[in-house]
Amino acid sequence: MAISWSAVLTLAVVLLAGPFCWVLLSAARRMKACRSSPGNQGERVGEEADHGGCAREEVNSIEYLVTLLGYAIGIGNLWRFPYLVGKWGGGAFVLAYLCSLVLVAAPLYLIEMGMGHQTRCSALDCFNAIHPRWIGLGLSQAFMLFCVLSYFNVLIAYAFYYVAASLHSPLPWSQEASGAESLNPVLTYWQDGVLGAYTGDLSRHGLGPLQWHLAAALLVVWLIIFLSLAFGKQVLAKVTWVTVVAPVLMLTMLLVQSVTLEGAGSGIEFYIGKFDVNKLADIQLWATACSQILFSLSPGFGTAISLSSYARPKEDVVKVCIRVAFCNSAFSIVGGFAIFSILGNLALRTGKTMAEVASSGGTGLAFVAIAEGILGFGSWANAVSVFFFLTLVALGLDSTFAMAETFVSIADDYCRRKGWHTPKRRIVAAVCFIAFLLGLPYCTSLGSFLLDVVDHFVGTIFLLVACCFEALVFAFGYTWDRLAAGIKAATGRRMPPRWLYRLLLGVVVPCATGVLALQLIIANLRAPYENYPVALQVVGWVLLGVCVLLFLSTLWLSGESQLGQVVSARAEPDLHMTPVRPEREIDRV
Image (cartoon, rainbow, N blue to C red; front, side):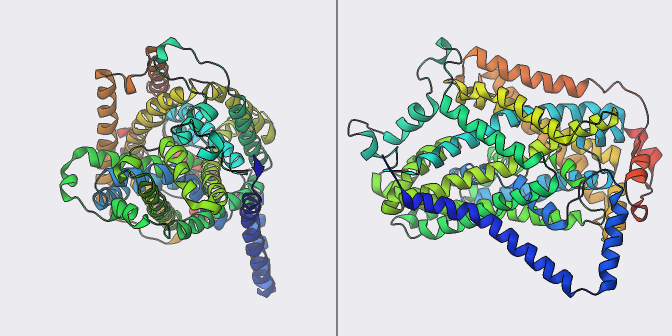
């Protein structure tokens, strides 16, 4: 195969876009600083000096927003949301999705941001400060996060491999490259060339041989993560500019190119051109919509708590929460137009119906259906392929940066609490190395099936359980009064009445997430998940059991809430909060 220079040029331009935007922003800041009066500069320097004694790093407002955007906007925005919209009645699903955002996901996300910002603690220390019995919730979230980290980066490794493959002409999954004897070259390339996956009866096989090309791609992913996290927040902020700006630019270019394809109109009509009112009466529609926004915005991991602990004391977390929630959903909806434009063209070229070409979500949609659809761009196929799969890489890196930083912050806070002066880069190196080793089983012939099982039992079921109890812990432990008082002290903003958030966080959120988790558990008890072999089912149930046991392990602990001391010791003096009714609320925990 020859090198596609158009793909190489596209790759170079995309990689330089983020640094270019960061340089422009830095230049604008310097110009603004130069125009400021000397008195104002002195005030700013004094403010920084006041914070200089704080052991915890701080990030500015833009970097904080960009980091949270990167965490929220992930791979699922492009390969799961559009598929679900097409499957569940178009506009009806979008309506259910937006309702779930407002009533469930956004309130959970806001309380995580508020708790982290006001306590300036990682997730584990934050729950410990609320009450020692909730340490188990933080431990279970940390374990869940590490499990997710171990397999999530394998998905990024898939996309990395496709980016490298896109530099070859013709594309390796095209009919021209695979030969006339291949009936479905795209599927063959994915299953045999990339995954090396087993077919038939999986119970007859073990993990199988390691796919070295995937292991190498996974190593590259973890090296990028190490280099981004090991040298402090400022380095991570600069890298995040690349991984946040690049997907926006690439999605815009991909959208412009894809909507002009022949057949794009039919794809868009299938995506959003219908509103099946009857679907709104289906409880499964609401369950799927609620699950999607929870997994997209991703409260429940404790990541928003840890990331918000680095925000400046006067940060307006409400405004940031609204912006992140809006941009996350907007990216999903706009991305769907690009995806279904490509699928519409694919349906026209292959003579299939839209329902057939859009019949799978997740990796099947991205690496099979879209990969096949990209072939329809003709001479632009290599460039478009680089655009699409590099977008997936960037979206994945954004999310994994935030998750890895969350786990590192938990380990870093633990070392400080023990009096161990461990350099952060050593902690980052240890986390990256262990997680890389744990990710290797997912790079075997059985790895894709193992990944699906672990994601279902840990990254789905227990995430719902964690969201359920996190809402209850906040409602009756941290309290809305404390959060509202802190936000008012920091920004002067008045929050909605107490009864509204007590209804949402004390009733709606726990019921919605708890019922979803219970529904999935009952379904898996009745029938094995995806009829996978017993060995894979056991792995899933054991990991879920470990999460539950960690959560239960500290419920017996007694003690008192340390929120007053934590907030008083770590927050700025003018942000000190006096709980409205601390004794009554803490006793109820």
